Image 1 (cartoon, rainbow, N blue to C red):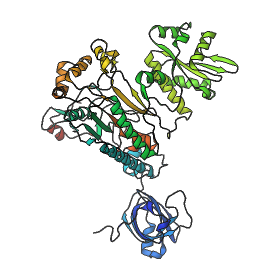
Image 2 (image 1 turned 90 degrees about the vertical axis):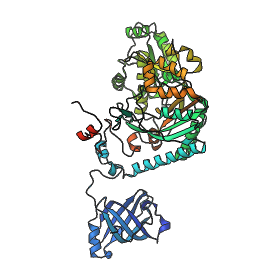
Image 3 (image 1 turned 135 degrees about the horizontal axis):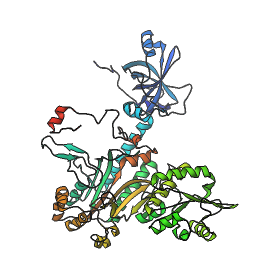
Image 4 (image 1 turned 180 degrees about the vertical axis):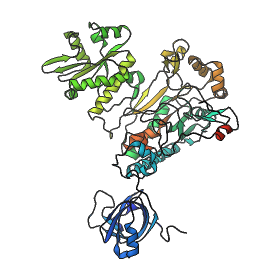
Amino acid sequence: MNQMGNLRRTHMCGNLRKEDIGKEVVLMGWVAKERNLGSLIFMDLRDTTGICQIVIRDTLGDEKFSLAKDIRGEFVLAIKGKVSERESKNPKIKTGDIEVEVEEFIILDTAQTPPIYVKDDDNVSESLRLKYRFLDLRKESLQNNLKLRAKICKVIRDFYYENNFIEVETPYLNKPTPEGARDYLVPSRVNPGNFYALPQSPQLMKQLLMISGMDRYYQIVKCFRDEDLRANRQPEFTQVDVEMSFVDVDDVISINEKMLKKLFKEIKSIDLKLPLDRMPYDEAMSRFGSDKPDLRFGFEIKDITDCVKDVEFDLFKNKISNGGSVRAISIGKYSKEYTRKKIDKLIDYIKDYGAKNLFWIKFTKDGVTSSISKFLKEENISAIKKKMNLEQEDLCLIIADKNNIVLDSLGALRCAIAKDLNLLNPNEFKLCWIVDFPMFEYDEEEKRYVSKHHPFTHPKDEDIKYLKTHPEKVYAKAYDIVINGDELGGGSIRINNSKLQNEVFDALGLTKEDIENKFGFLIEALKYGTPPHGGLAFGLDRLTMLLCGTNNIKDVIAFPKTQSATDLLTEAPCIVTQEQLKELNLKLEK
């Protein structure tokens, strides 16, 4: 039985215009809204292109009109009719000048009353939206996001293809590797007791592709990390993975910022000025308290330790003598927005970042007021005023602690204040490369150095001599691209000889057994002629989120997980049967 009868769709609902008046058309879609006025019924028919008003009159006959009266929201219809001019036009929609007078219709499927409204301003909880994601995805905003995501992917693919990159798929079933986040493990049925790991990135595979002579590779690829999730982090995510041979830092940055220029031009009609700014990691941390600074506003961090080193205030003295610092931000003309009560809320906010106290100085026409006025001499205030470039009505916020706590806290504070003051314009894009990252960072729990990026990153040539003696002095040929306080992507030049790679493994405290078990195949490959190579990976989900103007990464992923890594739609993960466990030679402990 042909469910659609003789009807074949001729047009999409959202594409009809005044020029189509008089045409006979066949539309198919979902009923978004219906209004019964007695002798005629108006309906909004929706498909992926938009909505079109259709009119069903009682002149169709009693049987057909009676059937039309039973049609409700989300019924699926096929209709045939003639496009006519609307009497009461609707300028809010693209098809607002026309409607379709229905001559024939078929109910393709009925629908129960949906548990969520299919409209963008529905305020239902996120958990319910994710449980009924197939209904949520009928909303115009989410469909537009997925369409934009598809266009972004096309622009990216076109660019790399035009620049001689080869798209190569790498395997999902890999070998578990140390460093980084936890792997998702997959038990092997045919190799009892052995496991694959889902890739956190195709890092080793793309390096092997360079060793194989592919020269330029890219891939839009799924990656997996079993880590504690934050609001905009997913256990499975998509990245644009890129690798190039016979290159150094400037080569990788140059080609990829050209890709970004093309992307912003075609998606947002924004003409990025190249080359993009670059900022060393140490400068980013000292000025903004973050290696992914939001540059859309000021509130830069200044070190005022020298201005207060002689102040008889135990908290300042103790922190300075123990290697800490005293730093501050000024919020300038916005100081009038911050009363004592609002400043107290800021104190509570920074506690999440390890800071225990927030001090302030306010310069008003009536003089200087401060939470630590009894400790500050006139020369201290003058020095702070000069260092911070303060003027009348400025508010200076100060934190004293260990350097990492001061920078983390003030970095978060400047962003929180900017958000509170509505300074974060989603249509303004500030891009910057962060370069010259430290090669290692010290892990207090493991009592050893770990990779800042990953263990295959090439150290700066002049720092290789410190690998064995002072790893904290080693900087890397690494770089991140940052947009509006979000890390959009990152990469590095890779190590291309086994001797240097082993020296880096030694600096990380890996044993020869660890190296052989985890990376033996890479070390072996590095012995057979490896070109200098490097690349990076862009986070496609985050990039799409920024270009869509949303602040929720779930809005640009068709079927996202919750923050507890669960899928409310399919109810994954789930318990498996004893038979399945037995097949995999697995036994669960209670």
